[in-house]
Image (tube, rainbow, N blue to C red):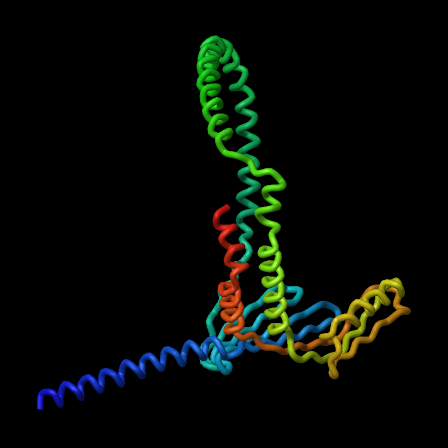
Length: 280
């Protein structure tokens, strides 16, 4: 009977432990795999405006960033917008200007008083010159002894020549590590770039050649070839302007950063390069 009760207790404890571990694993996977969605909207008429919307965990966390001529205005909300977190803005302190002006006036008065005091103190300085010369000779001897000791310590440290530095850093393994690191950075950028873009953009400059160069640069970017995205250059404009509306959507997965970090740590060349940096 006692054994049966102990087995039931162990069974219940095992179920509780497994359920807690399963919940922890589920939460970790949800945080790593759930995408952070973003939407960027830009307007340009009389002034440039930019709105950035961010949502996470099925809009449980939401963030808004408004950028216009008045500045940056962020907003954060939880529970699908039901709970808003206030963000305090620093108000300009106009009292500092008055305080600075008062301090400047006081400094001017102090300078005038100090000029009269300096004349009285010149005589006392002349009397102290002889004593300062004797003490300066002793100080010079102490400084010279310290500099000799420091010079000996510096000589003990060997400086690496250019060829030694080249052989240490510019090895084939380090080059492969840098190539691998740049490839992983490109992988992150590719994953985090916007997936969709739409809108109409009208622009022009006072020089048709400059407008053509801008169009040529844009045409090289594969991301700009979207169905809903239209760009209209104006080669006859006499001034620079940008008008229109652009919208871009995408998402970011935190798990991508974890995968890239694991790849860098697994790679032998990157580990050796990290060791060189740490030794330095």
